[in-house]
Image (cartoon, rainbow over all chains, first blue to last red; front, side, top):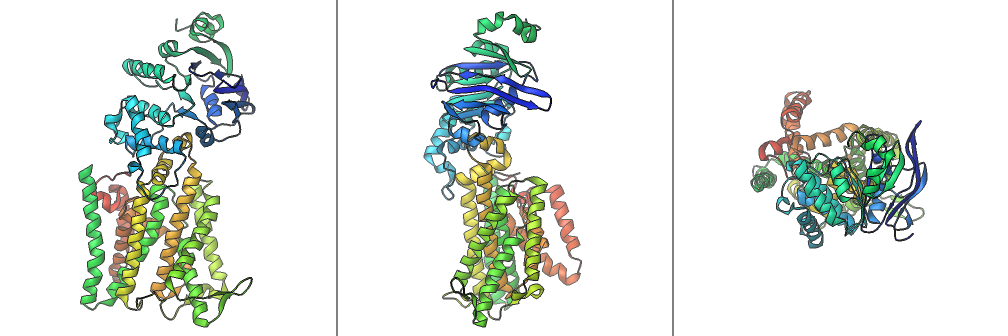
Length: 249
Length: 331
């Protein structure tokens, strides 16, 4: 089992009478993209919260590279190689694009306790940040104030920060959110390459992207995984069609 | 962007030139009181530069920074009081003698303030927003009433120190020499602030103010970043307290008052939040208004209030923001 990068074992989480996560067990293998789909209110964000450490589960466990991280807070999980992106971009808007990218590299270096030399003249930090920006195509905007970026560029920067962490696994919360057709296509191509570096647990609403990218799909409805399989299996699954894809096809 | 930065840089240089030229002019014109006023402005500016690290970069609105100012003041008062009465501060488990030596007093003021900031930060930084303001205020009031009831060191009346403490090689009783000493410390603090803001630590702290979730997601802990900022901030404000007490040769519980905590915030808002020279401009203007308007009316704070209102409503970047435009990291 140790070749699993990320694993949840029967996670449960309730808010009052509402069962937001119901015995969810999912896995992420090296080199794959595992997509989690489901209608609004299915508990996708709650699940991501438990995987990243922001929400404690009521029961069950989360394993990262075979290590039980259930009780670790988000920073500790990030240091163990879990990089998440946010559904709503979480960027330091007053800072430049390069400074935002440096933040990821700084987290990866684990050495924020340096008080005197400027961060941007630290070549190790800066190189890592610039490499990440180059990969997502934002290097020419490195000196731009983040607030001046377009929505699509902010989504790219969101991914670049995760990238500059050099993670073991990505957890992406709707990276296509708010992107147009062209933006989604670019992001899809990019994620397709990215899986070779580290596997991606992808929560996404954009079905075209999911069907194009996913090696496996799990369908979450009312907090429960109702189906899990390859793209073809999920397309054919009767329960899934009724619960979710019914009106789309 | 580069042009804007240059404008703020020029403005800072102009303020710096004023800090050097005005006291020299006062020396030439034989107006020692002006030098005392300038010293007061420089020392209050130093206290506010300390607060600006927590408030400006870290976004921590502490309404209890008078705690550190007061601790610095009492560190000086207690050490000098024992030195002038030839008694020891404590005899068990080891003997600590009083001292009139400024560098030792500064060291004690800085270390004790930093330690207090660590303990207060450990508790108060678990909260944020209004709760953080209220908890820091509560700590301020605790120290204030403790000082009032501390009869061994003058209680409500405070402590008077007969002769200003000494600095090797200088005659600190000469106003311009003491001023020079205070200005040198202010410049050192500004250099530290400037380095901090650009450092990896400053980058992370500044991001923790804007997007704490993101900072957690890259593996950094906003709480620790803020705690370290709070400790550095408290230490600098504590050092300012020791200088302030030495300027007046007097320390009393009013150094712990919440009004003083509020005034430090006002300096920063008037000058410009997170601006390098914001606290300096704010403190200098405050001392000038206090002197000129205070001579006209006891109710001069009305004018200060009006000025503050205008700046908050129309000039979000404070006076520096109004003249130099948007800054590098802060609106």
